[in-house]
Image (cartoon, rainbow, N blue to C red):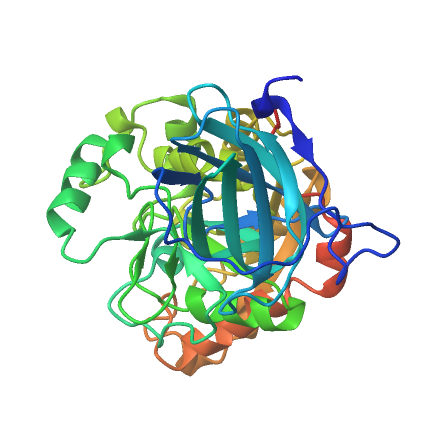
Length: 398
């Protein structure tokens, strides 16, 4: 038998596929058994990006005290217990009791049960919430990162982020000082509710939690959203930091490759495992002094190309907002339209020029009235055709 880490198990779930046999038999599930068990993947409340076929390969890995035992798993709707879903074989544990495999799973929000059996021995574990759906990463300046005004968090249990723990302000400041990825939150999800601060650099729920909730409900899938934006930055800062070039700034440290390093960490630390549908880019308002559209376009192209290189995926989708800075400075808006036309796999995002004057308290930053409108505009920029046609990044399976 090939090593189980190279085994891809294609699971046939009756709710999504027809004409499939189920070798496992329904049985009562209880984890009150000896022979220690550790389930290392998937972590709770993570969402794995679905492909254009609506499925993902869900990683399942762990260890038990049982050598060469048989490993089986089943998926029930999240919140359910012992509903009789069939068990699916995953192969055998190695002599040291470890195992890892993947299940082909349709989009949905699940409870995962895993069992290891060897003779009279049994070990088992459960992940109560794990999903297959949509993953997004936000980049940009303060209009993307957020501030002191936040909408209520998502109420839909399927809307998640990877969050900074409560009372982690000191660690977050140390991360801003060093950009050390080891300081970032561990690889597990958190429901994107009130008071949650998304990694790697977001500010609260802002409007993004409600945007994600709109996507979850219209697409009927779980959503994971990360925020890599950095307030006070321009496209020039993003381009230079993507290239590792220095620039002067009162609080953004170019020697750390801020602000771009936040996106690199989001891609390499998190999205490389979960996959990702698109980067949501809310930029341009701080670039109004630049009148040379060619320079602004080159700055967009630079960080986009670097992100695709860092992920190893030239087709990584970028959704670009459009907004005219205050006054009659039309260059930025014109460049954003050009980016959408000319840079492959870039797509039109919301049109902030349609916001009402009351939606922005200083003509740039979103007011309490503007936040729900922004959430709606971003959700409307991603119609059903976007999800059926825009190719996501899916993790490379060894």
